[in-house]
Image (cartoon, rainbow over all chains, first blue to last red; front, side, top):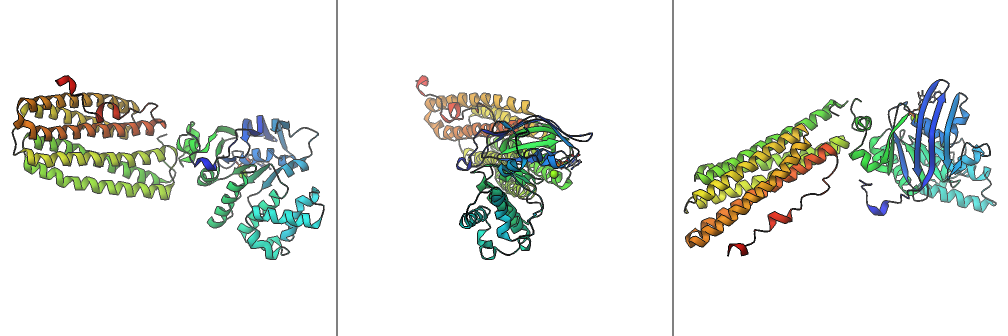
Length: 265
Length: 239
Ligand SMILES: Nc1ncnc2c1ncn2[C@@H]1O[C@H](COP(=O)(O)OP(=O)(O)O)[C@@H](O)[C@H]1O
Ligand SMILES: [Mg+2]
């Protein structure tokens, strides 16, 4: 069975954006990711689901080398972005993170103005030559994050003064401002109310017409609503990966079924 | 995958809609038997009971639809749970239709009681109704026991029902040609036979749902409903 939604909303390309092969992650002696291989498609929302501690965030952080910042963390195996090894010595992690943006569970705007939050990335990556260029990027990013109407009259107000849902959309605006090719989101809605959650989900649906989104979520319904592909992790293993419509109606593995139906595994 | 949900109220919901569908199925089984019995014994009172009981069947269907809508809205079922809910919903619709056919048979009983008897045809009809009722009983068991093999057997048995219908149809034609005074009776009996044959199709549809429930897959080659059953046997060879 394919994605059950209307054909018009499908943009899935079947082209791998990321290819991970035999990935192992260790925190000291703790083997947190065990031999995971997965192709993450371009222009597709991929949901990572699984019980707490199964390694979703760890694997997500491998995709833009956020694990580099954790001393005891060791990553083995191959992770290719557009066919190129992102762990190659020639790759600059800062450049990589501009291509592979990230949004965290708790909205974490910088203690700066709304404008400067969004302009931060484009400035350090030298994406704008003039103030007008930068203004344009900020407006475009805020529009993409569906925050422009609410923020346009208070661009110089501190980002931290926004509501939780607005702060999260600001973080998304900040992440998309560098024109990433992939956006990683780690439980982006867990601190948001249902309205703000819907706004972020709507945004995700819109973003994936341009790039890949990988989202870690604890809400089965959110995974079902926003993703076309779902990966189920369990104790560091990638147990099952497939079309979301299939995983939610007829999963192959009993562990997946137990988890998504809310049974004791 | 028989372990319980962490949220026990979810198990209770699913069990209760399955109990309702079993109850509805039991009532419909009885309606089949009673409708045909009222026909063969010319029992107008029993026919009346069948018609009255059909209201209960309709009420149960409405309750089941309400329950399943509730489970979908409140519990957001997935995987096997979702398939249970979908199967029960569709089965409720099929059972309601079977109940309607039984009611229809009971209605004709009232008319037929006034007309000439055709013992032989009644016996054939009895056999056919009995087979459909057994298929229904089995499909309800298959649903409760998650038995895809039993469901597949039922689908195969529907071919026998179709054959019984075809031979009854021929019998009626013969009777009508023998004596035009039989025409009115035979027309009624033919409609009844056709109703029973359609009941078999609805039982088959439930069996297909059971296979989906158990395996998660739709049958590759769903029996094309048109082939034998919707076209009555060719008249030409009765010349
Ligand atoms: N910074 C860290 N230092 C040490 N161990 C960690 C760290 N982050 C995660 N872990 C361990 O790695 C495993 C997977 O954790 P995590 O990726 O956070 O799981 P999830 O996101 O699925 O809840 C857990 O055993 C966790 O304790
Ligand atoms: Mg996590």
